[in-house]
Image (cartoon, rainbow, N blue to C red; front, side):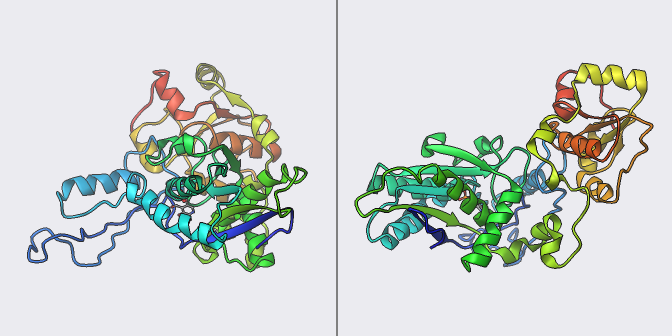
Length: 376
Ligand SMILES: Cc1ncc(COP(=O)(O)O)c(C=O)c1O
């Protein structure tokens, strides 16, 4: 049990799973005829697909999921796609497992609040259903990552609608948590509560405490307490590289200078941006250096003529070392939808570049405006 406010907060730890943005692996179909060896894969084979970035790029032609679906389609019925995003058994597993487990732990009661991060939406949907059947007054809070922020295993507000199991009706409230807040929450759970949660568990904790704070002054129930449950769905060991990248000092490494994590929302909102028609005119007039932050695959397929490709992760490394470009030439940054480029535009501006702009709406907006793109 964690904070000793009026609201009792209970953490339920469930086994960790791979996050939605990670490459899927092949699973041998369990009911395949064992005598039929023609197309069956060797038992237990796991094939790793290339992970190009933390989140999928809609303009990429060779992203892991496309490869995955292509391989499945080509292999006939040799494989079973368990598909955690659309498989109703995901929800069922939580409706028959996690939900009743929570009610049992609360001596046969539903909590006043149920708070969960939303990845596939399976756990929150299954648990919410059972808790509401038990007591329709339970309030359900779904947590997602803040816009263009990455927290392993959960979606951003924009992405969540693409998940097959997501139904907005499940949640009374949907709130977002930033990656740095998720890590702060994780540290509280690790250090103060002895719960070895990872960043998603930390996001659930932070989101829960923030949501519940608003109720601190409300009158309490019969026994003077109310109950909230949040799910801790990961373990920290699996996410050490994520933590190291964002908080190297926690692993005894020097803190990195010029990090996106240092930016405030206000700085990102104030980042200089330029819409497609103005960007075009600007390119013709002043010939800024156009930097495309997408994957090499997406870049090779279609890009702005004359642009250079510095993939997001590499760009982040470069920036840690100081301004990677001369201050004398303007810079236009482009990414898939204009969110990551806005963050880098804010960072480079903070680092003293006098004229760096983000392409508003990204390459998608450029393409949708019918503006020319070239192929490698
Ligand atoms: C680490 C982690 N956290 C949270 C979640 C979110 O839970 P759900 O997928 O049930 O919405 C997942 C889902 O895969 C996950 O892997």
